[in-house]
Length: 148
Image (cartoon, rainbow, N blue to C red; front, side, top):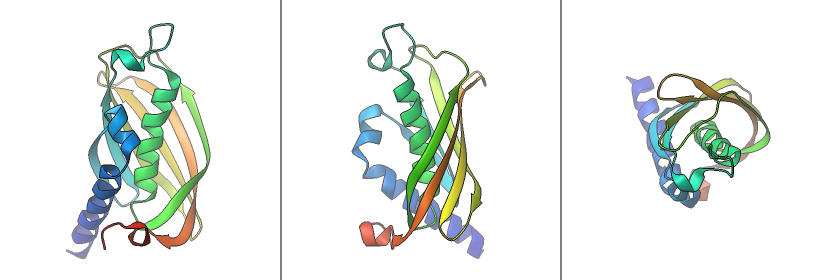
């Protein structure tokens, strides 16, 4: 029962963080799922997200993956800050495509966490793979105004 309650608290924490992030709102990113060390967000590509070649701008795709990464890495309650990221793109994305970014914790120590994020289209195609490392601060999300 404690694990279930802890997962619920982690989801509540992530929902709170996402609700306070104006960039997430600007892009139209939606939180789908969250818990300790994981988060899934979704996004529909609009015309304003396209680059000069007519496909989704790489910066938008990075922002989607980075959002899932940031939410998953802060789900434990300690303030986690990205210190290194890498992203590889696999297929083009067009206007109207619905994308999902799923972040999963690979390892976490007292001061560092490593995460993998997969961005997929609704047809299951892997759009991009993202890896990121965070520094875990001694400060907590609560100290930043988050839920207790």
